[in-house]
Image (tube, rainbow, N blue to C red; front, side):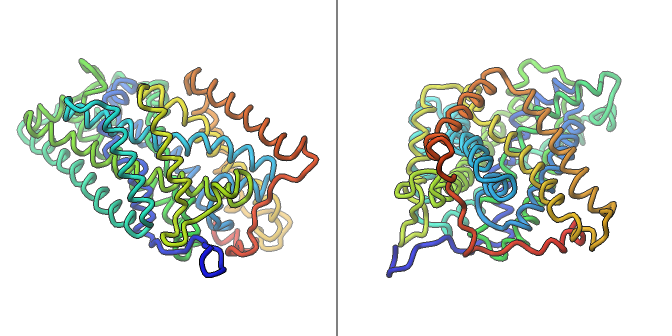
Length: 463
């Protein structure tokens, strides 16, 4: 409270700021990190795998854009499910997504700490973890304006370093012309099955594009800005990933590597020498910090929204600092989660998050269809039969998006599915306790003081 009035999130972010947060979340340098794995799975057609993954995730991005347009409140999949599928369903979706958002900062810090340890081996990974988490938390606590500025600088630097690597690759290709410029797209060893598997792996690179929807209440003209930002993040990220992968595939044709996990580092030595390779490693370090900053920002907002709604203890999670306007306790909690990652591998850490992410994606696609069914007459301009554009935009595209995300969920490891299933079961138990066996209503989202969704009649013009 401040001056007798509740402290609320305020709209400050521009389209450029929101898009930068989304790109930082996805980490531009990630394409270099996983290139070897994607190329090996796709038999040397990494750019095709990234292009397929981009198209697949774009379907879900369109669904997020529609939901952000019609329901411009923070909370992402959680808010949309509560509004369209009911409070209990929204609670369980929010609980599942919470697993993703709660542990994603830890994963971002852990990946960055691994890079830093490789660059400075004298400093243990756990020390880097504490430094990264502490510094990121401090920046986010100070305020959104500082976070925005720092994020823009770091993301621009990370993109510059990636493009610098591409420039060195192009110079190298000027002296060592590739045998074929089409082989990275499709070659004699390519198969649909291989590209599909590789695309499923590449799709993990896009986790986080949806996180910009958690910033709706802190964005100017959110009903217009957030939908555009979601689409732009996937489009820009997809073009960057596919383009960089194409150049890398020209430098190293085929999918055979001594060690796919360090293919980018080996390639950096080849095109620029050892010193350049060490500097290229900085792209991952800088991008990792920017990603951790963006990830913790969105995670703390989801915790705040759930606390504000009473799904989580309101006195702990639903409070903003009156001076900074930030959810300090939520930020401290997400910062403390780094302690979980002090002694685990990156593979184990990532198994915590993917279940909630893909479940959230699936539910948002379903929400678009439910929204359309509820307003189908208005969406069709009063006609009894919906228009083809309405069906394409609000039924067919999200249905395909849901199929893609369900498929991606089936590709998760047994560990990921087990952890996700146990977490969801715990959420059911918490919901039963919260509602006293459904004898009390699930805490409702207070949308009365937030921007109203546009009329259903606007559906047709946006399809």
